[in-house]
Image (cartoon, rainbow, N blue to C red; front, side, top):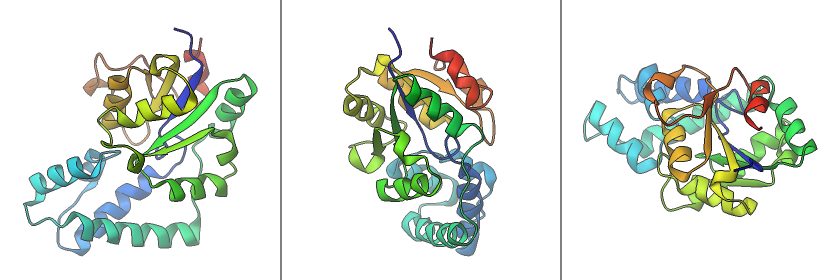
Length: 215
């Protein structure tokens, strides 16, 4: 089926922000006495709240207070972004310009709240490229369930099979694949392609390389 739309994750794909989530999840966890490390933060990338809680409590015990730690992570990250800003991933504007110039419909599918996602994108001059901004809070089940990709495709007026999905995390890839999208991994902090056999339609070498998967 011809690709008519692109649905992209935000953190680690469009924005160079995943490194900040990893840093501040670890700092927040450590602040409250939980020995969070990089692999723990990577393990909950794009993961909906109920699944993240279960995983974190599995690592750190049932007394792990997800909301307490998350709120601290938000506080720390907001302070950092307010002072230092946030960066787009290399090639983001080039890819988005190509997509809009060639008639593709474009959506965001992110675990980040919609207002926050839009503020980040607006700050970088990227928001106008997106026809739809879909947040996990708009659907019943977040990633790795397929709901957000099904919702975003519907908002674009397309079937999931007409959409190319861009993800950097296993949870996001599972979500997009389950929805029926053509799913491309754009590696960021790691390259989990060996965990995703059978779920990927390709691995892109950066955002500019995504264009070759559109035909």
